[in-house]
Image (cartoon, rainbow, N blue to C red; front, side, top):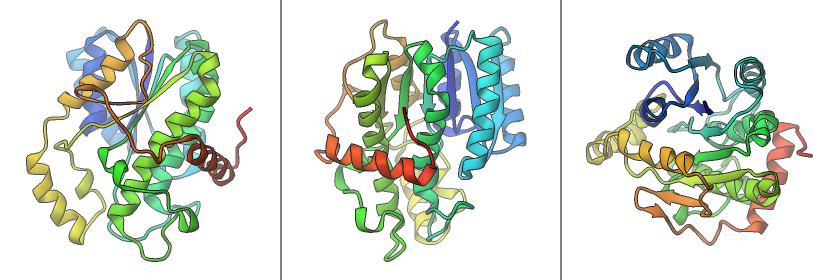
Length: 281
């Protein structure tokens, strides 16, 4: 049985992906922000899929020390229960913030959660992924196409705009996937970004206010159920041969921004290593 780790797994797209993959008999390792939410998600999934191995770990992925702790717990579980092999890592956890906020580590909140947490979690789990020639999936967005990396002020300390910061984080997701393929394809690793489309989730309501909350209230009405984009994730995992594209939506392989290139991917990789205090092999 193949094991998949899913972050942001207690609600929205992440929870729908857990359902989709459990139905396909994957072993599920979910990550959520709180013990309470993890417990509720686990109970709901086990009620429907009693024979599928499902476990949840809780942690605040905005804090790098928490990413390390959760990663250690997941690795210990994979070593004990899954022969040290991780087939899939779905970096789905994300957030929106209405105003400039920093994490405990001093980084802008959206950039830290939407990108740096994925970068660091993948780093810690890469050995398990290589053993399984695994697939790594980032929840990106079509909004990345209308954005460039804000290299001179990556944290948007000056002139903070929540929409631009979110778009940059989604561009970063694709640049990270590009960088992973560039560095680890020879180890059998395949990385992807997904455009889930407009989905009826509560991301725009969590720790937000003002314009962001108002806009999301109306935008959400036009969204689709989370179980629709969940099928994109299962498609990428279910193919016997890893799909060759980088970016996928509900129709299949999709076009992505010209900003997703080696120069930008390498620059973001080096910056992310610096901000996370790690060096990849």
